[in-house]
Picture 1 (tube, rainbow, N blue to C red):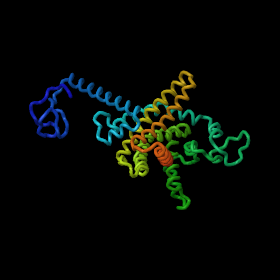
Picture 2 (picture 1 turned 180 degrees about the horizontal axis):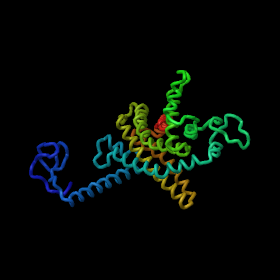
Picture 3 (picture 1 turned 30 degrees about the horizontal axis):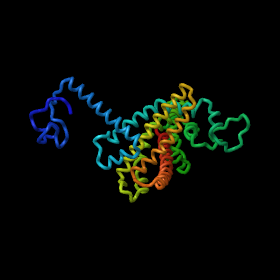
Length: 339
């Protein structure tokens, strides 16, 4: 509650409802004088910040200490004491992806791609024919592993200098000789990216990686309702098996994973900065704790035994892995053909 002066008029300024107290029973707005002083604005701002911080730290503390507790509180209607799960998800995911884009994306580029393509192909590619000693295989000479997908696309040979030239040539070809929808999209994207970055492979690759990594939040957003459906099927006759409840359970689980991965990144930075190799073991423990936490959260929320929960957790993760793999390919393809 603010300390601003209450209005003597008992009509809500927001919805015109008749008031019987300081707050409107219809829309919840406080019935105070709208002509605030600058001090009142500043006080209101800091009250909102501290209120958010208080709920945030309380919610995060319970999220970490009691797996599965918060989604139970939510479906049982006890929500006012905690930060809303959607607000919590938006905040933590924003922080996570900000750090991801700032720290990890450049690191991925430097590890996966270097200026010496021969080293890249030697390390990650499987020859499709016998390669002579000292010979550098070309993209067409290797069967690319998944890690090579982006490189295979950006090194796709083309003699076209513009999309207009490509379209013109395609129109002269018989219908059965023209590129299909996917081939056309790939070629158009490659031409556009090549023109934009002066034909430099590094620039083209980096642009595709940037497009893909910036699509990761959308990938997670799309995966959540699909995963909730998997839980709906796995816990078909469970009393807590509400689709919305499953989604809220996953929102809290996603938030926990974001927080653990932030710690994982932080300790990785400490390991590199201070040359403390033992921290890698601690980072491994953090990843294993995600598994332990997930099983315990499922056990508490759905109220089933340990053995049944572990079995359903394994089945859920098999389905989740297949789904994420499919979405990964779709979003990667979308990133590649994006112009």
